[in-house]
Length: 166
Image 1 (spheres, one colour):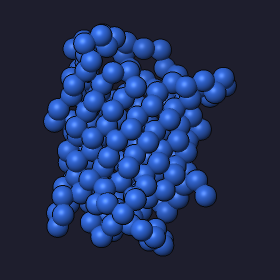
Image 2: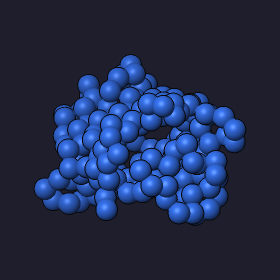
Image 3: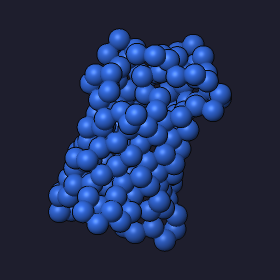
């Protein structure tokens, strides 16, 4: 796998994540919701700083209408395997997730350490996230998100397999 040009040295162990990823088979499941599928595009780009700029855009698979968007930054603590992932969600939530990556297995594990929501966000309040990002092969990424709300224990919420967009 080639290393993307312009990648900051602190991100070299995560070079496999750089680029644009897309799925046609995202699945949303949650005890208080009806299951549904979504299409999504993720982007992890480096503009020379020691972090990835992150965007996520999910759309309805048939209508193409917007469902969910996220913007944020994934930063490595220099000289360690520790990460911080700051994410703003378009439904009125910001989360700070921290965790580690395993260079040999290409797995990132993150857990929320802070969640803030706007005063008029739709209930129920989200209390916790857990996120796993795993490279299955050079061009296949799997993302699983677990969520806990004030009404529901921590359980799987989103799972998708992404292909590297060329």
